[in-house]
Image (cartoon, rainbow, N blue to C red; front, side):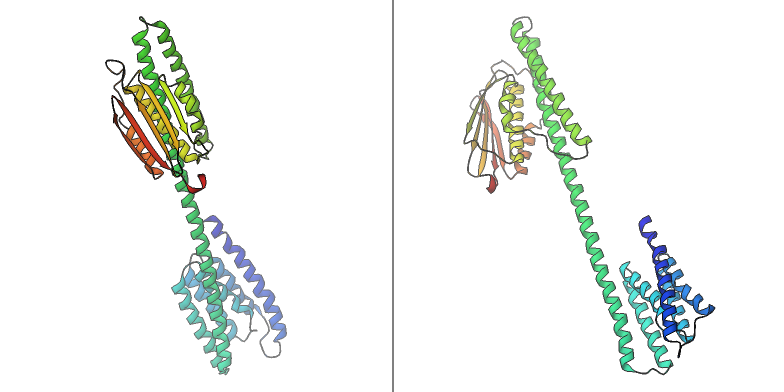
Length: 368
């Protein structure tokens, strides 16, 4: 707003200088049949720039004031030309600033005053009247075109800003989901391994030591991923963390379970598909560790022509009761949401004595 209000003084100064310079030249060129410039002429010429200066606050009154000063200048017999500048500028500003009804009404009043003056002074030439009408109409049409260009530019800017805000919101939502998945997986893993360590500390210290080592690795991993996500958000340029299928071996190794990885037809995939697939496998392993401790887990990835098929199957709990029966209950719905967001599907349910998660993620044409 400050930038806009600061424009009027400069425009008023330009109009004032232009009117004074043109008035000098016009008066010299029309010396034989128009009145020479005097104090009253300069006072009338000064009215227009003052009206331009105050136009934003009083649009109608200033336009009328400039038109009255213009008519008074002509009726007093001073040279034609310089006094037309102020009314023209004010009509132009009315249109560009969105006051179109007022602008066209004042344009009609301007036409009547100019044609009325011409007929009053004996210039009853239809060609002269047509020239006046053409000049005013041309001014209004140009103003309308400028207004349209300005509005379209502002609309493009608004659209771009809204799109940027929408993308930033979506990216931050993705960050929140990624952070949730990282925390849920690692905290669940730590909880299960801690339960295992407590359960076996006296009977099998060596296995308890292995569980504690897994806890150390998982806690380091979650701290690293949290630091990565938070650094990205702090930089103000949200980007999705790099959670890809190339990290599945590492994920399986620190899951604390016996995991078998199978891959068929491996090839590069879009980042969003890799990220979703990684998180689905991660959540499936978390659920297996929570509800079926000690189970063997088989992870199979099939890279098809049009889709990536993910199957995570466990053989069921080998302990009499799960070491941890706690959970948020959001694991499977969260995985299903990830698959649906890419246009895919996810089915989860019992499979023999164990449990199976099967996800199908469509692949874009260019990745095949």
